[in-house]
Image (tube, rainbow, N blue to C red; front, side, top):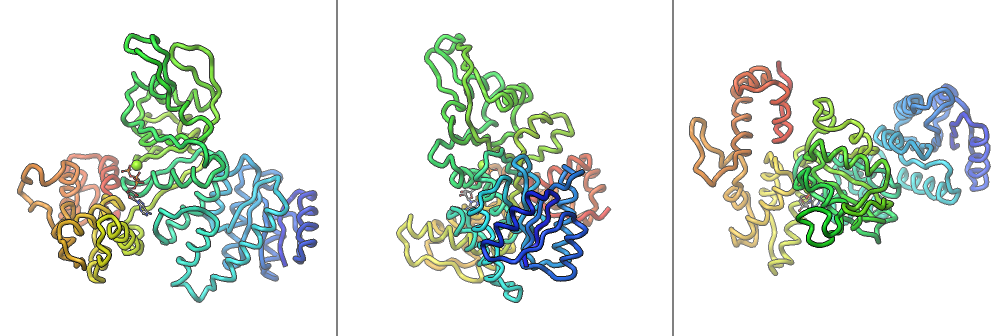
Amino acid sequence: MFLIVDDDVAIRTSLQLLLKQAGYPTKAVATPAEALATVRATPPRLVLMDMNFSLDTSGHDGLALLAQVKQLAPQVPVILITGWGSIALAVEGMKAGAAEFVTKPWHNEALLQTIRTVLAVGETVPETDAADAPARQRRHLDQQFEFRDIIGHDPQLLQVLRSVGQVAATDASVLIEGDSGTGKELVAEAIHRNSQRRKQPFVKVNLGGISASLFESEMFGHRRGAFTDAKTDRVGRFELANGGTIFLDEIGELELASQVKLLRVLQDRTYEVLGDSKPRRLDIRVISATNRNLAEMVAQGRFREDLFYRINLISVRLPALRERPADIPLLTQHFLNQLRATYHRPALKVSTRALHWLREQPLPGNIRELKNLVERAVLVSGKEELGPEDFQANAQRLPARAVAPGELPTPGTMTLDELEAQVIRQALSHYDGNISRVAKALGLSRGALYRRLEKHSIPFEEAG
Ligand SMILES: Nc1ncnc2c1ncn2[C@@H]1O[C@H](COP(=O)(O)OP(=O)(O)OP(=O)(O)O)[C@@H](O)[C@H]1O
Ligand SMILES: [Mg+2]
């Protein structure tokens, strides 16, 4: 039996009718309490539920119901029904374990297709086959979306890809957060590629490289003579991206003066080219990325709150590579495949021992660092089968090559960032992970220390 939960009788009836015609037995209830009673008595094959109940438009009741259903009957797939304005809520729901979501008003055939897919996934992923499940879930995702260049099947990554796939089709603005080298740009491209705008331009702008004084001319363009240095017309980035997607990379670096200007464009969806006061309409999908903690920057007054909400309808957080170590061997093999082709060395391979060793490394530069490491090992060792020693010798950024305490590195062997990371690691180990003492010893506030721990992806446990 399929359980339908919606407080709107019209929706209940039309869903019941649709499902009955498709040959599915149903039961429809109006309140979360009735829904839970039903799940307890006879677990349904599938739950189709609304996220908003009459007096509650926050979605709180919907999320609470979802959590309770998942607790009572974890194996029962739940499909959420949400209004158009609440995609963010639907994504919350997906994170809380919903299988899919559909938006109101739905398309009957599309809804039935979603139901068939959800049921099929349930059948092909038996609970007992846990080890194989991630690979299967990944295959299932690949049938729905185009994620070919994003390697991995760690559950955290799959969760990201599921959210990304779901929101790609909408025009919702997406904020991608994650440490350096975790694949933010790759994900931004994937959103565009899986959207209706895929045939339109995808324009990447590194906001970190644009000073406040040049912001308008870069982003909106200018007419010849608009200011002293404007010798020719210039087409702005917004115009280049019009109709498609603009990728605002490093948005955390944007100066406050530019933040205001960006906000205005995103609100009004119009802009003016410098030297030409005719407002132009903008039809654009916005994806932003940062390796900073924007919420914290908002709290500190360094990032505008209104802009934060504007760009952050949906947020996606990419896990650091050390949080998904099972993907390290997969990624290594992937990069090796690429190098085989690039360097015409078909016999190249990597030993199992080397894969184990790589899994143990901190890799603070994440996937980019792993990629560089593999490439260096291939080029420097010249061997066809790479062992741990081939990676170790080239792992400049790993602690194996770090300087001894009390010694300064030879110029050129370490960046200031790496040195900072090492000093922090040493202090952490010296003070047994006691954050307060480490902060004091390094002359930092606890907040500043946390930011650096995050920046360098240094794992820590709050010990004091
Ligand atoms: N899941 C993945 N599968 C395969 N390659 C990946 C994956 N994630 C990242 N990469 C590769 O790692 C490198 C870094 O990825 P990307 O540029 O997207 O990271 P980023 O998060 O934007 O980093 P930064 O913050 O430094 O700009 C790229 O070469 C990218 O192709
Ligand atoms: Mg990037």
